Each structure stands twice: as structure tokens, then as C-alpha cells.
Length: 298
Image (cartoon, rainbow, N blue to C red; front, side, top):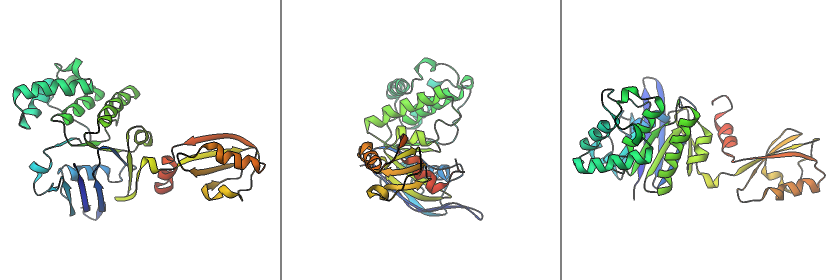
């Protein structure tokens, strides 16, 4: 079984602690969202996992192999996009992928087949013979994802893959990632500061803030949130008050188990004379994130 074990990782830049004693175990296929504000340490962690930088303390193991000590073995089945992708501008997409595939040890015949496979998945097939120097940002991101998928990696590391894209470009990348996720063949570690991206793509969410892991949960275990507005203030002294997380008189927010029908809480409130104006449901990730990181971070 594929695994990533991060043990006591810290990274210091002079007096600045970018990461502080991070411990994580990733050992189930699917998409894991690494969520946090800009500057939280997401990219630093990605660079440590892919051996672009070395830790100040601690170690990263991929399938039991230390990334710093033996990167050629540890990273053999890892594909990644770290920060903004750049390519040799004089090469075409086909030439770029052939170059990467051959470096990874593929025969010409295998690489030809592999380029066809990943270019279909990432929808770059129509511009394979264009030089990458002519590519838009969205095209570069799709090519970077195609390159990351060469050789069917067990681990896919994606550092904000939709950063800077227009809505159509974001939708294209997310659609591709959902295809890969549904196959359940790889661990996908996706860093982002977009809560919507985590909700759409991920099975597990890890929140990082100021270099530390502050929250880690399967998305199915994150309670949904109900924001209920009333025509007039309501007393919250009732049986469901334990689920109350915010009370502003005419507005209350409740944290409710995902499989609990909304009408259970609503019926309880109405039976106590509450006059409900409207009900808004959300996944609960937003409230969890804001309660941990704060409203000014995103």
C-alpha cells in the first residue's frame, strides 16, 4: 500500500519557522486537501516531500524510503506540480513529455503510448505539436498535470494547480482531477487556499496555519452547518442547543451531523414558537476553517 509518512518535520529560514514539528500519515488512495492561507507553509511542505528543499529536522518517508537520504528510490513513483510550471519554450508538448518519460527510464515505444494516455486524460491532445512558449497559463497547467501523470505515479503532489486560472481553466483542471480521484489508484495531495476546491475534490482535509497542522479530518466527518434567520430573536434554551455554535439574536448557526435531516432541528425550533425566515446549509468546512484560521486570512 502506498504511504507518505511525515515525522517531526520542521523548516527554518534563519529565525523564521516555516514549518513546526509537522507529523502526518497519508496511506489511503484518494484526494487529500492541504488547506491554509497564503504563507501558511503549504508550498514549503510540498517542497520537502519532493526533496526540492531539505528539512531542518525530521524526515519524510514515501513507501518507507527516506526522501532526503534516497530520493531516486523514494520519488520514483511520484508526480508533482510545485508552484508555477515552466517549460523549455522551444520544445513542443510532445517533445516535453517524451523528454520526461525517457529520463524516467521509459522506452520510446512505451513513452509514445504513455503520452497518448496522459494527453487524453488532461485534454492536451489538440496542442501536442505547439511549442510551449506559445501556451497560455491554463495550457501550461494542463501540460504540467500531464507530465506529472507520466508512468502512473502512486503519489501526485499538486501545489495550487488552479492558481491564476480563469473560471474555465479552473473547471478544466478540476474535471481532470476528479477523473483521477475516482480511479482510486493514487494518493493525491492537493494544496490550496480555496475552500470550494477542497469541497469539490477532496476526501480528507488538513488545515495548516503558521507552519503547524491545526486540523485533520475526513470530509465525511465534518459536520454540516445550518444558518437559520428568524423574524425575531429566539431563546436557545432547548434540547438542540448543544449544536448551537453562534447566536446573534435573529440569526443562529448550528453544527449538525451530515446525515441528520434539517427538519429535525427546524421542527424543534418551530414547536417552541420560532418564526423562521430562511435556512442556509453549508458543508461546515467554511465555519471550521474560519474558526481556526480567522476571517482575515483568506
